[in-house]
Image (cartoon, rainbow, N blue to C red; front, top):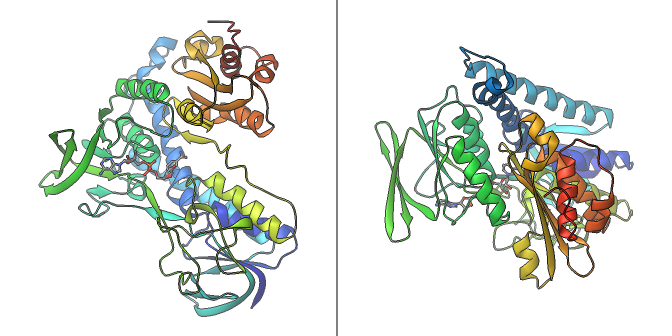
Length: 463
Ligand code: NAI
């Protein structure tokens, strides 16, 4: 079979590339070894974790916050099996949506493991045997997989990866979480809300280290209030199995920290999927971290072979992969297209949520910018207080002389949605004053970001 484009991997990067290619008139095939399309994000990552976060947040709110609204919710209980069934239903529904989009756009779907057999050939090995696809261009979108620790092998029972932690049959008594990044904090929150004693052990002196310190400290306090415990500056160095679970030993400065738990979630990052792909054999170069090296237009070192998403350098985020997919395919079709790597939002879906885009205050300072920073606490926002979601703050970082917004960070309910305004503003090169003078509906939480912009231009209103 002959195609203009063969995409390997059907996660958000791969399936978006296939759709855009088909729309632009390319005959397109997509190769996926999993039973369902959607990749990590849809099957075991973003979507199932958001389903569980939503269920457990409702449960937690019913227990802790309903009473202040005058609602009595006695005898509450959580049926974990039912919650998981709902999550599986959400995943199935979204996966059906991707199937529909493949069919609608006339994309040939190949089930099996794709291997690059040459610069214009992909071999697919699956239940249907072995097939060879001829391709004018090949796009690698094979994503990433969980990284483990050498002394702590995943077993899906006691030593869990994020794939396992979204599918537990019941809430364990205790869980140690190694890594205070997005996965550790989100899945730690899920199980803590269901009564598991969750302890996060983080190597760095703070959690969520890609965000600003003041914001992560505020988040840590709020998570502690929800029952999570933290050991920071603690690198887990060894582990042993015990009858009841696992015993971890971490180096905390000069001291040793010993921690026992029924389960351990290892959330120490992800690594690119290049094994068995035939990429290296075809001459595709990797960087020192094992990511596929790409140049202009997402071309690899082999003409005709492209790569995008988690398998190339940059943040391992679905929306970054999607935008790279669109831009790479549009460039193949001769259209002008690009990715603005300076403004990629990132979100941690705790309660409250933590969202950021652009530079942090620390990065802006390190770049030598003279900056103006404005913050606004949601305690002073009418909608946040009325809704019972007054924890958190918004922060705007602007260039002092030009006023241009360089970054924004938001810790609040729905921060994942609120950050979009800052992203658009930065995409358009807007100023803090533009944001401050833009009329926002009242009362809304979006006013919090506007107030932070007011503070950044030295004209704070409601603080
Ligand atoms: P991460 O890189 O965000 O965090 C891992 C943390 O583990 C780091 O803070 C690191 O210092 C710590 N660590 C490493 N080794 C350690 C050790 N031996 N002892 C103690 N701490 C140790 O990785 P994470 O959370 O696993 O996420 C993986 C990827 O998936 C990231 O790129 C993340 O952005 C992405 N992701 C994004 C989500 C989102 O956008 N909401 C949700 C989940 C994952």
